[in-house]
Amino acid sequence: MTDSTIASKIDSLRSAIDTAAKSAGRDPNSVTLIAVAKTHDWAAVQQAMVANQFVFGENRVQEALSKYPKPSDRPTKMRLHLIGSLQSNKARQAAEFFDSIDSLDRESLALELVKIRDSGVKMPRLLIQVNTGAEPQKSGVLGTDADHFIATCLDQWNLPVKGLMCVPPLGQAPEPHFAMLAAIGKKFNLPQLSMGMSHDFESAIRLGATAVRVGTAIFGTRPKILELAHDQEAI
Ligand SMILES: *Cc1c(COP(=O)(O)O)cnc(C)c1O
Image 1 (tube, rainbow, N blue to C red):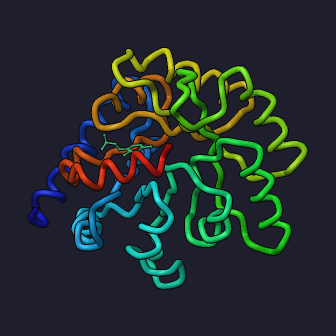
Image 2: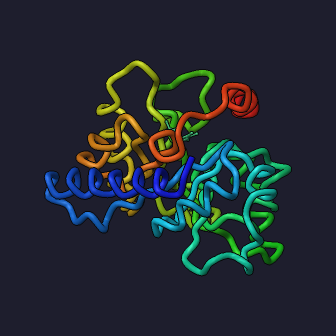
């Protein structure tokens, strides 16, 4: 894929994001585009940077470590988000490498992050992932457990939780899920809502998304074999 292809896809995506924000009566600058570069290489990331895109999402720690420079060597504007499920034994590496961990989904991981923070590691920004569709195969705290988990993370563990992320079930209208996430966020006065992907970011923006996560519409389809490996790690 050429520079201009990735760059022009980013440009047209940005204008679609701007239009969706304006028609929702929102400031377009209140919506961040997270370019999801999983399975794509550093060259693709560089092509996105040509289009002034510096916020990237990855769903595997190992892949990110081998793709991006270490934090002190990155362009100052670069922000890396971990958007895939995080194994506790990789939490320290993730905390040191990412600017934001958007997939905090369980108590054992929160307790591991507390330990890591207490050992002197600067905690990245955290988002709690909510399994709004209560899908057994999907990570995230259940809607019914979200209030208690969020309150515990904030009040008892003093973790820097700034918002919520969800991935609505495939084949369902996403709007009720976005609305549910927004309602939980509002209750706790959390400023960040990461919701909306390539096919549904417009309705996510209408319902309050402050970050949309787009991969395919920027970088093209992912190789099937890698996609399978990703699915397996996510389970
Ligand atoms: C892969 C992924 C995305 C991007 O999905 P696309 O359909 O390629 O835009 C967004 N969010 C999460 C959590 C993902 O794993």
